[in-house]
Image (cartoon, rainbow, N blue to C red; front, side, top):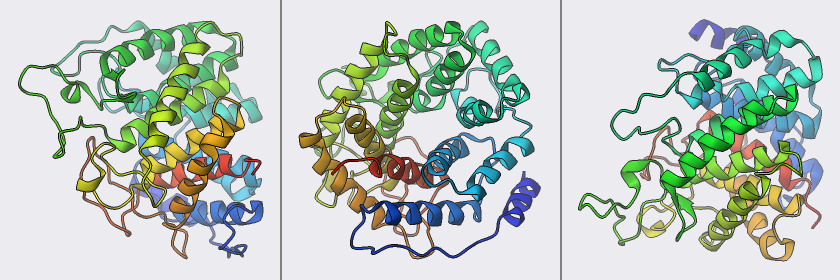
Amino acid sequence: MKKNILILSAFLVILGVSASNPKDQFKPDYIKAQMIKTARWQLNNPWHELCDWTNGAFYSGLFAAWKTTNEKFMYDAMMYMGEISRWSPCDTGPMDRANDVAIGQTFIDLYRIERNRDMIRPLTDTLKVFMSRPYSPKGHKVQTWWWCDALFMEPPTLVKLGVTLNDDRFLKYNDLKYKECYNLLYDKEEHLFARDKMYVIKGDGKDRYEANGEKVFWARGNGWVVAGLAKILTELPSNYPERPFYEKLLKEMCTKIASIQQEDGLWRTSLLDPASFPGGEVSGSGFFCYALAWGINNGLLDKKTFLPVVEKAWIGLDSNVNEKGRVGWVQPIGDYPVQNFNKNSWEVFGTGAYLLAGSEVIKLKR
Protein backbone atom coordinates (compact mmCIF):
# COMPACT_ATOMS: atom_id res chain seq x y z
CA MET A 1 0.00 0.00 0.00
CA LYS A 2 2.71 2.52 1.01
CA LYS A 3 4.63 1.77 -2.18
CA ASN A 4 1.55 2.52 -4.28
CA ILE A 5 1.00 5.78 -2.44
CA LEU A 6 4.60 6.84 -3.00
CA ILE A 7 4.36 5.94 -6.69
CA LEU A 8 1.18 7.98 -7.04
CA SER A 9 2.73 10.94 -5.25
CA ALA A 10 5.80 10.81 -7.49
CA PHE A 11 3.57 10.52 -10.56
CA LEU A 12 1.93 13.91 -9.89
CA VAL A 13 3.46 17.31 -10.54
CA ILE A 14 2.33 20.35 -8.62
CA LEU A 15 1.56 23.30 -10.89
CA GLY A 16 0.66 26.84 -9.79
CA VAL A 17 -2.95 28.01 -9.71
CA SER A 18 -3.99 31.57 -10.46
CA ALA A 19 -7.17 32.04 -8.44
CA SER A 20 -9.77 34.61 -9.37
CA ASN A 21 -10.82 37.34 -6.95
CA PRO A 22 -11.40 35.46 -3.69
CA LYS A 23 -14.07 37.99 -2.71
CA ASP A 24 -16.30 36.66 -5.46
CA GLN A 25 -16.48 33.00 -4.63
CA PHE A 26 -19.19 32.24 -7.16
CA LYS A 27 -17.39 33.18 -10.35
CA PRO A 28 -16.86 30.04 -12.47
CA ASP A 29 -13.18 30.77 -12.96
CA TYR A 30 -12.68 31.10 -9.21
CA ILE A 31 -14.53 27.89 -8.42
CA LYS A 32 -12.57 25.99 -11.05
CA ALA A 33 -9.29 27.36 -9.71
CA GLN A 34 -10.19 26.29 -6.20
CA MET A 35 -11.18 22.81 -7.36
CA ILE A 36 -7.91 22.46 -9.24
CA LYS A 37 -5.91 23.66 -6.25
CA THR A 38 -7.59 21.35 -3.75
CA ALA A 39 -7.46 18.36 -6.09
CA ARG A 40 -3.72 18.87 -6.66
CA TRP A 41 -3.04 19.23 -2.96
CA GLN A 42 -4.91 16.05 -2.13
CA LEU A 43 -3.34 14.02 -4.92
CA ASN A 44 0.07 15.10 -3.72
CA ASN A 45 -0.81 14.19 -0.14
CA PRO A 46 -2.35 10.72 -0.63
CA TRP A 47 -3.70 8.73 2.24
CA HIS A 48 -5.17 5.23 2.70
CA GLU A 49 -5.18 2.35 0.27
CA LEU A 50 -6.30 3.60 -3.12
CA CYS A 51 -9.40 1.39 -3.24
CA ASP A 52 -10.44 2.30 0.32
CA TRP A 53 -13.90 3.79 0.98
CA THR A 54 -12.26 7.06 2.00
CA ASN A 55 -10.76 7.34 -1.47
CA GLY A 56 -14.06 6.18 -2.92
CA ALA A 57 -15.45 9.50 -1.73
CA PHE A 58 -12.41 11.47 -2.88
CA TYR A 59 -12.26 10.02 -6.39
CA SER A 60 -16.00 10.52 -6.76
CA GLY A 61 -15.35 14.20 -6.13
CA LEU A 62 -12.33 14.15 -8.40
CA PHE A 63 -14.39 12.79 -11.29
CA ALA A 64 -16.91 15.60 -10.76
CA ALA A 65 -14.02 18.07 -10.69
CA TRP A 66 -12.61 16.67 -13.93
CA LYS A 67 -16.00 17.04 -15.63
CA THR A 68 -16.12 20.63 -14.39
CA THR A 69 -12.58 21.68 -15.29
CA ASN A 70 -11.47 19.19 -17.99
CA GLU A 71 -8.04 19.12 -16.34
CA LYS A 72 -5.98 16.25 -17.75
CA PHE A 73 -4.01 15.61 -14.54
CA MET A 74 -7.26 14.67 -12.81
CA TYR A 75 -8.22 12.13 -15.45
CA ASP A 76 -4.71 10.70 -15.52
CA ALA A 77 -4.74 10.32 -11.73
CA MET A 78 -8.06 8.46 -11.80
CA MET A 79 -6.89 6.12 -14.52
CA TYR A 80 -3.68 5.52 -12.61
CA MET A 81 -5.65 4.73 -9.47
CA GLY A 82 -7.76 2.18 -11.36
CA GLU A 83 -4.75 0.53 -12.94
CA ILE A 84 -2.81 0.31 -9.66
CA SER A 85 -5.94 -1.14 -8.01
CA ARG A 86 -6.40 -3.53 -10.95
CA TRP A 87 -9.95 -2.16 -11.14
CA SER A 88 -10.82 -4.26 -8.10
CA PRO A 89 -12.80 -3.26 -5.02
CA CYS A 90 -11.11 -3.49 -1.64
CA ASP A 91 -11.51 -6.64 0.41
CA THR A 92 -11.73 -5.78 4.09
CA GLY A 93 -13.06 -9.12 5.25
CA PRO A 94 -16.75 -10.13 5.52
CA MET A 95 -18.55 -9.95 2.20
CA ASP A 96 -21.17 -7.56 3.48
CA ARG A 97 -19.14 -4.39 3.47
CA ALA A 98 -20.62 -1.65 1.32
CA ASN A 99 -17.39 0.28 1.96
CA ASP A 100 -15.46 -2.11 -0.27
CA VAL A 101 -17.29 -1.07 -3.44
CA ALA A 102 -17.45 2.72 -2.95
CA ILE A 103 -14.46 3.11 -5.29
CA GLY A 104 -16.55 1.33 -7.94
CA GLN A 105 -18.43 4.55 -8.63
CA THR A 106 -15.29 5.93 -10.25
CA PHE A 107 -14.51 2.67 -12.05
CA ILE A 108 -17.95 2.85 -13.70
CA ASP A 109 -17.58 6.54 -14.57
CA LEU A 110 -14.28 5.84 -16.30
CA TYR A 111 -15.60 2.72 -18.01
CA ARG A 112 -18.36 4.78 -19.59
CA ILE A 113 -15.65 6.80 -21.32
CA GLU A 114 -13.04 4.13 -22.06
CA ARG A 115 -15.47 1.25 -22.79
CA ASN A 116 -12.99 -1.34 -21.58
CA ARG A 117 -15.03 -4.06 -19.87
CA ASP A 118 -12.04 -5.10 -17.75
CA MET A 119 -12.53 -1.85 -15.84
CA ILE A 120 -15.81 -3.06 -14.32
CA ARG A 121 -15.51 -6.85 -14.46
CA PRO A 122 -14.08 -7.34 -10.91
CA LEU A 123 -16.63 -4.89 -9.51
CA THR A 124 -19.50 -6.64 -11.28
CA ASP A 125 -18.36 -10.03 -9.99
CA THR A 126 -18.05 -8.68 -6.43
CA LEU A 127 -21.52 -7.14 -6.46
CA LYS A 128 -23.03 -10.37 -7.75
CA VAL A 129 -21.47 -12.17 -4.79
CA PHE A 130 -22.84 -9.51 -2.42
CA MET A 131 -26.33 -9.96 -3.83
CA SER A 132 -26.27 -13.75 -3.62
CA ARG A 133 -24.58 -14.33 -0.27
CA PRO A 134 -26.83 -14.20 2.81
CA TYR A 135 -25.91 -11.74 5.54
CA SER A 136 -25.13 -13.01 9.05
CA PRO A 137 -26.29 -10.49 11.68
CA LYS A 138 -24.04 -9.82 14.66
CA GLY A 139 -24.70 -7.52 17.60
CA HIS A 140 -26.08 -4.19 16.43
CA LYS A 141 -25.14 -5.11 12.85
CA VAL A 142 -28.57 -6.54 12.25
CA GLN A 143 -28.72 -6.34 8.46
CA THR A 144 -26.68 -5.84 5.30
CA TRP A 145 -26.59 -2.03 5.47
CA TRP A 146 -26.71 -1.46 9.19
CA TRP A 147 -24.98 1.93 9.22
CA CYS A 148 -26.19 5.03 7.37
CA ASP A 149 -22.78 5.72 5.77
CA ALA A 150 -23.40 2.63 3.65
CA LEU A 151 -26.03 4.57 1.71
CA PHE A 152 -23.28 6.58 0.01
CA MET A 153 -20.91 3.67 -0.47
CA GLU A 154 -22.90 0.96 -2.23
CA PRO A 155 -26.27 2.27 -3.54
CA PRO A 156 -24.80 4.69 -6.12
CA THR A 157 -22.44 1.92 -7.24
CA LEU A 158 -25.28 -0.55 -7.68
CA VAL A 159 -27.49 1.93 -9.51
CA LYS A 160 -24.69 3.15 -11.77
CA LEU A 161 -23.79 -0.40 -12.72
CA GLY A 162 -27.39 -1.44 -13.27
CA VAL A 163 -28.00 1.52 -15.57
CA THR A 164 -24.69 0.99 -17.38
CA LEU A 165 -25.35 -2.71 -18.01
CA ASN A 166 -29.10 -2.26 -18.49
CA ASP A 167 -29.58 -4.86 -15.76
CA ASP A 168 -32.31 -3.98 -13.29
CA ARG A 169 -31.26 -6.72 -10.87
CA PHE A 170 -28.78 -4.26 -9.38
CA LEU A 171 -31.44 -1.56 -9.07
CA LYS A 172 -33.96 -3.89 -7.44
CA TYR A 173 -31.39 -5.17 -4.96
CA ASN A 174 -30.57 -1.59 -4.08
CA ASP A 175 -34.26 -0.77 -3.53
CA LEU A 176 -34.65 -3.74 -1.20
CA LYS A 177 -31.58 -3.07 0.93
CA TYR A 178 -32.02 0.70 0.91
CA LYS A 179 -35.51 0.43 2.35
CA GLU A 180 -34.27 -2.01 5.01
CA CYS A 181 -31.77 0.63 6.14
CA TYR A 182 -34.39 3.38 5.89
CA ASN A 183 -36.82 1.41 8.06
CA LEU A 184 -34.13 0.71 10.63
CA LEU A 185 -32.45 4.12 10.93
CA TYR A 186 -34.63 6.92 9.52
CA ASP A 187 -36.34 9.12 12.11
CA LYS A 188 -39.62 10.18 10.51
CA GLU A 189 -40.09 12.99 13.04
CA GLU A 190 -36.69 14.59 12.63
CA HIS A 191 -36.17 13.58 8.98
CA LEU A 192 -32.62 12.49 9.74
CA PHE A 193 -30.80 9.16 9.93
CA ALA A 194 -29.36 7.65 13.08
CA ARG A 195 -25.83 6.51 12.38
CA ASP A 196 -26.68 2.92 13.37
CA LYS A 197 -29.03 1.00 15.66
CA MET A 198 -27.16 2.09 18.77
CA TYR A 199 -28.46 5.63 18.20
CA VAL A 200 -32.06 4.69 17.43
CA ILE A 201 -34.43 5.62 20.26
CA LYS A 202 -35.89 2.36 21.55
CA GLY A 203 -37.24 3.35 24.96
CA ASP A 204 -35.27 0.63 26.71
CA GLY A 205 -33.42 2.85 29.15
CA LYS A 206 -30.23 2.69 27.10
CA ASP A 207 -31.08 5.42 24.61
CA ARG A 208 -28.43 8.03 23.84
CA TYR A 209 -29.12 11.75 23.84
CA GLU A 210 -27.02 14.88 23.45
CA ALA A 211 -26.24 17.21 26.36
CA ASN A 212 -29.21 19.39 25.46
CA GLY A 213 -31.58 16.42 25.49
CA GLU A 214 -31.86 16.07 21.71
CA LYS A 215 -31.44 12.85 19.77
CA VAL A 216 -27.97 12.11 18.37
CA PHE A 217 -27.68 12.78 14.64
CA TRP A 218 -24.18 12.85 13.18
CA ALA A 219 -23.50 15.46 10.50
CA ARG A 220 -21.25 13.43 8.21
CA GLY A 221 -23.48 10.37 8.53
CA ASN A 222 -26.41 12.35 7.19
CA GLY A 223 -24.11 13.98 4.65
CA TRP A 224 -23.26 10.52 3.34
CA VAL A 225 -26.97 9.81 2.92
CA VAL A 226 -28.03 12.97 1.06
CA ALA A 227 -24.96 12.94 -1.18
CA GLY A 228 -25.73 9.32 -2.02
CA LEU A 229 -29.32 10.27 -2.81
CA ALA A 230 -28.17 12.92 -5.28
CA LYS A 231 -25.95 10.33 -6.95
CA ILE A 232 -28.74 7.75 -7.11
CA LEU A 233 -31.21 10.23 -8.58
CA THR A 234 -28.65 11.34 -11.16
CA GLU A 235 -28.74 7.79 -12.51
CA LEU A 236 -32.30 6.55 -12.10
CA PRO A 237 -34.58 6.90 -15.14
CA SER A 238 -37.37 9.44 -14.71
CA ASN A 239 -39.99 6.69 -14.98
CA TYR A 240 -38.33 4.25 -12.58
CA PRO A 241 -41.06 3.00 -10.21
CA GLU A 242 -39.12 3.68 -6.99
CA ARG A 243 -37.75 7.08 -8.00
CA PRO A 244 -40.48 8.98 -6.07
CA PHE A 245 -39.30 7.31 -2.84
CA TYR A 246 -35.78 8.68 -3.27
CA GLU A 247 -37.01 12.11 -4.38
CA LYS A 248 -39.28 12.44 -1.34
CA LEU A 249 -36.48 11.40 0.99
CA LEU A 250 -34.08 13.94 -0.51
CA LYS A 251 -36.64 16.74 -0.17
CA GLU A 252 -37.47 15.85 3.43
CA MET A 253 -33.86 15.63 4.51
CA CYS A 254 -32.76 18.78 2.70
CA THR A 255 -35.60 20.76 4.25
CA LYS A 256 -34.51 19.66 7.71
CA ILE A 257 -30.83 20.21 6.98
CA ALA A 258 -31.47 23.73 5.71
CA SER A 259 -33.39 24.58 8.89
CA ILE A 260 -30.43 23.76 11.16
CA GLN A 261 -27.65 25.51 9.22
CA GLN A 262 -25.47 27.68 11.46
CA GLU A 263 -24.60 31.34 10.95
CA ASP A 264 -21.20 30.59 9.40
CA GLY A 265 -22.94 28.54 6.69
CA LEU A 266 -21.73 25.20 8.04
CA TRP A 267 -23.20 22.45 10.20
CA ARG A 268 -21.88 21.11 13.49
CA THR A 269 -20.85 17.52 13.96
CA SER A 270 -23.95 17.07 16.13
CA LEU A 271 -26.81 18.38 14.05
CA LEU A 272 -29.27 19.00 16.90
CA ASP A 273 -26.81 20.10 19.60
CA PRO A 274 -24.55 22.60 17.82
CA ALA A 275 -23.68 24.50 21.01
CA SER A 276 -21.86 21.48 22.42
CA PHE A 277 -19.71 21.14 19.28
CA PRO A 278 -18.43 24.57 18.17
CA GLY A 279 -16.72 24.88 14.82
CA GLY A 280 -18.17 23.90 11.47
CA GLU A 281 -17.48 20.35 10.27
CA VAL A 282 -16.47 20.56 6.63
CA SER A 283 -16.97 17.02 5.34
CA GLY A 284 -20.61 16.77 6.41
CA SER A 285 -21.19 20.36 5.34
CA GLY A 286 -19.61 19.69 1.95
CA PHE A 287 -21.92 16.77 1.29
CA PHE A 288 -24.91 18.86 2.39
CA CYS A 289 -23.89 21.70 0.06
CA TYR A 290 -23.53 19.27 -2.82
CA ALA A 291 -26.94 17.67 -2.29
CA LEU A 292 -28.71 20.99 -1.78
CA ALA A 293 -27.16 22.52 -4.90
CA TRP A 294 -27.90 19.36 -6.87
CA GLY A 295 -31.52 19.54 -5.76
CA ILE A 296 -31.85 23.12 -6.99
CA ASN A 297 -30.09 22.39 -10.27
CA ASN A 298 -32.37 19.43 -10.94
CA GLY A 299 -35.64 21.08 -10.01
CA LEU A 300 -36.35 19.14 -6.81
CA LEU A 301 -35.70 22.00 -4.38
CA ASP A 302 -37.20 25.47 -4.54
CA LYS A 303 -34.51 27.89 -5.64
CA LYS A 304 -35.84 30.86 -3.68
CA THR A 305 -35.85 28.85 -0.46
CA PHE A 306 -32.63 26.88 -0.81
CA LEU A 307 -30.25 29.09 -2.82
CA PRO A 308 -29.38 31.32 0.18
CA VAL A 309 -28.59 28.16 2.16
CA VAL A 310 -26.24 26.90 -0.56
CA GLU A 311 -24.57 30.28 -0.94
CA LYS A 312 -23.82 30.48 2.79
CA ALA A 313 -22.60 26.89 2.77
CA TRP A 314 -20.22 27.42 -0.14
CA ILE A 315 -18.74 30.56 1.41
CA GLY A 316 -18.27 28.65 4.67
CA LEU A 317 -16.65 25.69 2.94
CA ASP A 318 -14.37 27.83 0.83
CA SER A 319 -13.16 29.75 3.88
CA ASN A 320 -11.65 26.49 5.14
CA VAL A 321 -9.39 25.94 2.12
CA ASN A 322 -5.92 27.24 2.88
CA GLU A 323 -3.52 28.89 0.44
CA LYS A 324 -1.99 25.53 -0.50
CA GLY A 325 -5.34 23.89 -1.24
CA ARG A 326 -5.77 21.82 1.90
CA VAL A 327 -9.38 21.47 3.04
CA GLY A 328 -9.44 21.83 6.84
CA TRP A 329 -11.88 21.44 9.74
CA VAL A 330 -12.64 17.84 8.73
CA GLN A 331 -13.60 15.37 11.44
CA PRO A 332 -11.38 12.27 11.26
CA ILE A 333 -12.77 8.81 10.55
CA GLY A 334 -15.49 8.15 13.10
CA ASP A 335 -19.12 7.25 13.63
CA TYR A 336 -20.64 9.82 16.00
CA PRO A 337 -20.41 13.51 16.94
CA VAL A 338 -17.16 14.46 18.63
CA GLN A 339 -14.99 17.56 18.84
CA ASN A 340 -11.62 16.11 17.81
CA PHE A 341 -10.67 18.30 14.85
CA ASN A 342 -9.52 21.82 14.04
CA LYS A 343 -8.43 24.01 11.12
CA ASN A 344 -5.49 21.70 10.42
CA SER A 345 -7.55 18.49 10.35
CA TRP A 346 -8.01 16.99 6.90
CA GLU A 347 -9.12 13.76 5.30
CA VAL A 348 -9.49 12.66 1.70
CA PHE A 349 -13.26 12.46 1.96
CA GLY A 350 -13.34 16.11 3.07
CA THR A 351 -11.65 17.09 -0.17
CA GLY A 352 -14.05 14.82 -2.08
CA ALA A 353 -17.04 16.54 -0.46
CA TYR A 354 -15.63 19.98 -1.34
CA LEU A 355 -15.10 18.97 -4.97
CA LEU A 356 -18.61 17.53 -5.24
CA ALA A 357 -20.03 20.75 -3.80
CA GLY A 358 -18.06 22.91 -6.23
CA SER A 359 -19.22 20.80 -9.17
CA GLU A 360 -22.85 21.74 -8.43
CA VAL A 361 -22.39 25.28 -7.05
CA ILE A 362 -20.75 26.29 -10.32
CA LYS A 363 -23.93 25.28 -12.22
CA LEU A 364 -26.26 27.45 -10.16
CA LYS A 365 -28.04 30.26 -11.95
CA ARG A 366 -27.85 33.04 -9.37
